[in-house]
Length: 192
Length: 318
Image (cartoon, rainbow over all chains, first blue to last red; front, top):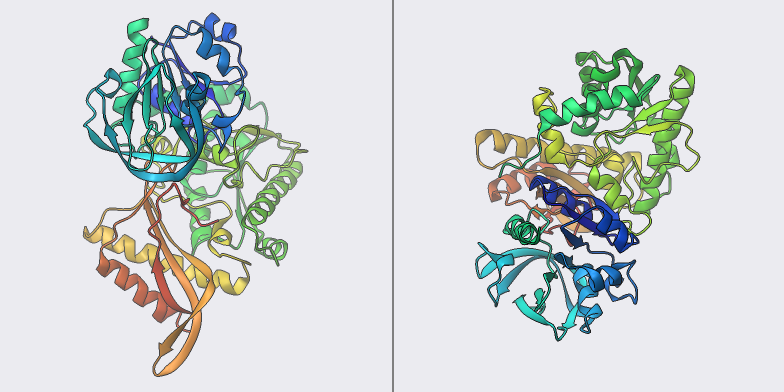
């Protein structure tokens, strides 16, 4: 069974990410973001989800031990909301308070095909809840999707299996959310 | 949309776990909602007569609710106590307007009454039907507090009794699945907050305002239930009324009226973590509005419909 852990940055939907993975029959656990990389490696994980968190969490200089995961991991990592913002900053991009924060229903427009979005139409309804966003994409990343008020809704590392999503695929109201998780699980399985 | 959660397996795994965990007498905080009823049924299966179900009538319950809960406890053959604490709740909430204060005061009072009962009966364990959104939204450590749920945020640090929460990792849709397997009549009952009508009155929850909101909530439920029965609409996730702290001008039979405003709230959800407002047919809204303003004509002269999703809103206003 593929093993994907959820790193808790204090988000309201951290546990919902855990539930989605559990429903997909993934072996999963919520772990604090202060866990050391060695501890996680010892448990033979195949992937990580970096959860969201309260406003400005993704803009901190240090978010637990996440730097270490992003430096050392060869397995897939997906950052959601604050986790996504922090990932962008770690790789040299920029994240700042949003000019127009988004809450609730938003239309996602996919601009580049990727296996993470297999089975997801070019335009779909996703749910948001963010005060901050990625305002400059890191050099090593490419843009996958945007919304009307937020350009970097989805991004991917060019050479590593690292993804960032501003919207929340884990909530019921994101129409293709479960599909996106299924695709991420597949990506983790491939490495495994 | 059938998810992987297996209620039979959960029941099978949980009962021996509870047998192992509960080594004496236990008390369950029994509101009569889906979560606490499922919890009571599971613990009852595990330890039988070692369990005492306690229902507290806070005075902020819905119309006839506590009476029905009493019947339910009897029907489930639970060893039970019924405590009328409405006077006490009324006096500790006097002058309290802040929503978080209300929630914390009510939560702590619950625990103090349970502790007292536990002392009297030599009970060591408190069983609660806490589910995931309760502790998530209550916050703590990394997580921001959205609202303190009565069964989490009100827990005092010096609590003397051991807490047992078998549904902690579940969401409402999963608890309902267990309720259906156990054939409990409450399986489809809409959620009702622990602090009750006190958080549906914005501002001070005085006895006079409790009467207004109790009737308004009853009308909203009754009209929507009737429409659901007729097949005009599907049963929403949660539907109720909120009493606002503003007044507006109306006209009643050629005379000026100056009265309260009721907001109707109805939302759709699977797990309470995200919600959208319900599309209630206009004729149903119309009946709700006319009936509220006619029944409560001395008090309420305006009804509005809340069209906010979660996020950015939450289901209850406080």
